[in-house]
Each structure stands twice: as C-alpha cells, then as structure tokens.
Image (cartoon, rainbow, N blue to C red):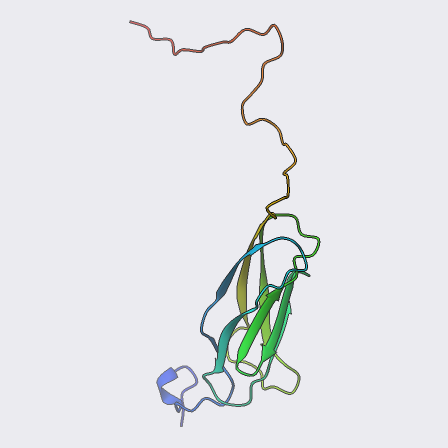
Length: 148
C-alpha cells in the first residue's frame, strides 16, 4: 500500500514528461540595417521524465522568431522596424498537440537583444543632459544652516 503523502513510497519511474533546457536565456548583439541576416541561436531541450514530449514555441513579441527543430529550440530575430536600443522578451515552451502533459510548469527562454545603429545612422539630438537656466536667472547655492 502506498501513502499519498509520503514521496518515498512511490516508484522512481516517471510516467509523464519533464522538460529540461540546456540554458534559460539568450543574448543577441546585432547591428542594423534591418533585413541583414541574423544567425539564430539554439538551446537544447530534453525530456527527463517519461511519456511522450513534443514542444511548441511561441514568442512574446513579433521580433522573436522561435522554432522547435528536433531536440533544439532555435530562436531568430527580425529587427525590421526596430530602432536601435535594448529589447527583451520570452519564448514560451509548451507541450504540442498530441504530447503528454508536463510534470511541473512550462518553461520560458529569456531573450535579450541589443540593436546597434548602422555606422551611417545619425542619432537625433535629445535634451541636453545639463540643466539650463532661463536668461537672467541667478545661480543659487544652498548650504546647510549650522547653529552653535
């Protein structure tokens, strides 16, 4: 007889899949122009449990292009329309149709992309990092008051 509250009373054979990943994040450093070929990066996945596991991958943003190819999750980027800057999102990995349900939770890959401007891109000037005073304004220096 097995005790449902005693984890040691169950056999060691797992009958449902458990998803394991070789990494949980990817970092891309790319340079514009948009449309330039950006090599995809891959993460190896495996079923460390039992049962049958096939994966489906979805990106949290339109610029993240995931695909499951064999035992790898390949992630590519489409930076068309993205200005230079830092971007982040996730690839969510779930059991695909026909797969057994997972033991535990689904997994996500964190994706970070640093998009650099092209060499001939001229940045638009932003506000000056130094504060400006209106004409005629005097500079004020505030000192602490010390009483003796």
